Length: 252
Length: 275
Image 1 (cartoon, chains in turn blue, brown):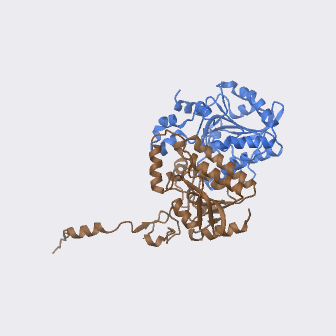
Image 2 (cartoon, rainbow over the protein chains, first blue to last red):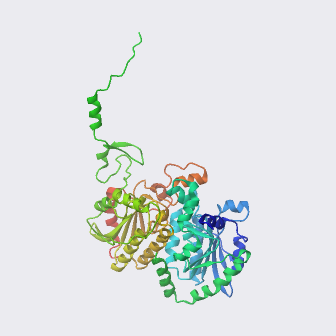
Image 3 (cartoon, chains in turn red, purple):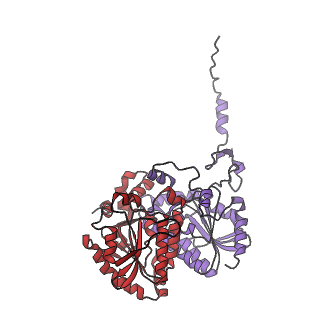
């Protein structure tokens, strides 16, 4: 498979919705909405549920299922109030020392007028800063598209995993081609140079694990993989956890 | 009777004289588009009409802002990357900017205050954040944390460096970690946003300061104006993402003319003496 085919696969609709994915990982999911400042962003679903016997916080980007949903989420592109909602729920999880699972499928942060006027850059910067010292475990899973700073904001975990059919890159291949080759149609060539496939990212130690393709069984498989990892991270003394997280990002 | 005027044939001597005239005596301000005699921009390179500061190289900025400067971490290995044309681009950037990377870091004296200073350079590959720039900034914060020094970063950047791919993106997280630990030690961090500060740099350390200053009319934001216009199919106002609008939206503490920047930093540093 070429790198660009990998991109197309990452963008293709999943056989499960974001809510089905969440329901497959945690039971009795209690959604929490809003950033407590401005408004709620439907591009990010957040809440609390049971991962096996343990309460966890789940924060997921979503592209939506129906047309109105897809329009409201801008195809899965969060706005600043979405990132602030994520930060609020991370602080809430930290308070109760509840592990956090982020599920990422976003082309990137939404490039909109309102988003800019409400501090898109500052919202992402705040998340990056907060996660650096967040006193609770965080496992990030890129399940589809992992695009740019908008994905990174939710992907600064103690571990970062990718689904086999996903991608993670500095920018979309189209954006990359338009900047470097001044030609948006060269996306295919760009994708080949970007190192965006799970295989390359695993080799470059950007991610810890690639989850095999599992179709409709993916949520169950992910849950099975998450249980022991979350248990191990949650059992660590906080100082050790933070030192390890710092070392993880210091190596780049 | 109708008079027809034919242009006088140009004298070769006149042509020669015109060609001998020095060029570049006049500058058009990129912000207000007014033309002014170059000398009127002064050594600080500020538009006499609107107060916009022309983009400075890191060396020019350091000379303007500090009384003393000692560079840190000059020799850092470049990431081995075979991205086509990247090595040539870096070489061209080095001669355009006089800098060896998009940021120069070191210990500086501003007024009577010793600070750890990072100055970005838009003349070097648009100030883009790559692995060497990220490592320099990360070490700047680490050394400042150890030595208990405040950090001042003069930011200007188009964002993360495309040629280094995902490794550039990771620099945002790496530098943010270092900022967080400097902050946890109770130390002061001041950012000066200069034109332009965009993308991954704005979405990380440039927006993480305790105090965020900006030069007049600097463009500050995440997505590029043209990208947004193409997304929303509408034209954006001229002041979109300009520091004045961003300040009104609540993200900048103060907009400081270039001539007053040193004094402003000194005043803020004095208020945090020992922080």
